[in-house]
Image 1 (cartoon, rainbow, N blue to C red):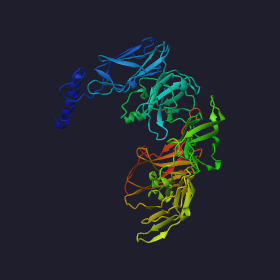
Image 2: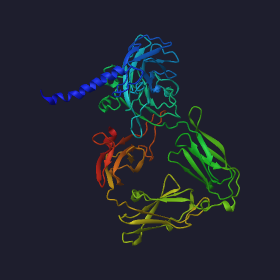
Image 3: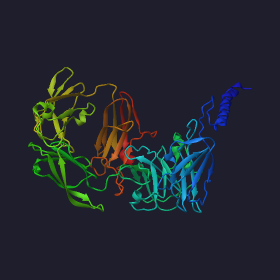
Image 4: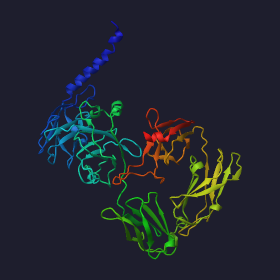
Length: 596
């Protein structure tokens, strides 16, 4: 006999014996003193009522799941009833059984699905029961249709686990705000969902991160996703349907093979009602006003007893927050009477002209001239910050930020020098660009080719800049050199098919930080230089309205968030692994990427 065929069978037999021994101990209330650890999850041995039962009573309904061993409820929120009631299902453990019951009566003539996925574990080792969906009806028939889909974050395209996906027969825009859905489900670790055994009719499809756990959309707390059009199910539910089977989240092959009929992209809703949200005086000569919705339409803004030409104002990029400075060095007023004339939402949501009056008290109470002994040097200078990033200095230049708007400037008094490796200095040409969105920010860009091995020093002399407080700047110098580490790499994309404006961003592997960015509207090259060895992602956002920012969605306006795509490798990964000292070059057809 061939011993090579016999020997491998010995450990297999030993494992089988161990598993059998394990099962024989699985229902005891005390853990065995030895042997292999129990890794087998509980098994359902009985359900009451049975799957597919019709005419289930609506009053004091209790669902009983009996397991082959003692169990505990690990995640009660994962016991989910569709369609949901006003309150979540209640539960208790009795012996080896899980009893699920409800505070209110079930609806009549309704098909229900009770899901207990990732909610139950065995009592000893904590092995999670993968899940089960029980279908029953309080009427004479079981509805038979199913819809499937995937919910993703609109910015990272990562799957949204635990989102509540909801169907509404009421096709009005207000339904998701005020009523419970007619069917619902939770997404799994892949962001995947199925809503099974539903009626063959028209629906609106939404998904929310239900922070209030009330199965309704709360604008202040929840993120939302929606399908633009009315949907109608086309798939018939069946226990043999792969889309309805419970898979381990680590089972990549089967999880990715499931058919996803709808892709939903979750976002933080843009507020629709416009009104003043907050206002505050932040200093002697500074205040701000914030609005509920972006793109506030202000007709005029004034402060009593302050000439209009003494006010300096700056909106943020989304035009929902306005900074105000009083360019007047007279004694600060104890109270600023601020008047804002703008388009405000009325009771039905229409924008109408409105003037609001706000009294902004000075922080710290009435003004008192500070004692000379308490005044520090930092209290009497024009505060600024001068920075330079070696990795982006060629494109973005030095960045100069002031705490307050400046009323006199001495850019022509600045000097920029370059020092070569032999310590020889020479003047370098530069140009100054004002940030279009921030009146206190400037970019000083080197106006000639930067050379490796050179050190560049930008110098701001003393008393050449003055802010609205009447204070002058201290002198400041900043040095920068191009990175010269041979281990640094670069990544270049040659873009074609650029039909719109796009934001092209280099992100960290976790997609939680933007490392560099471009705005492009024509074919050409995008270069990310001086990269350390590591893993990166490249995100493209379609800026169709050409406002230079990533716009979120608006449910009531039926506007989806701006479309996002990631550069994807052939293996389907979004992560680019860049080795040391490498020059990587990739071709990217943007039009084809956004057609996918």
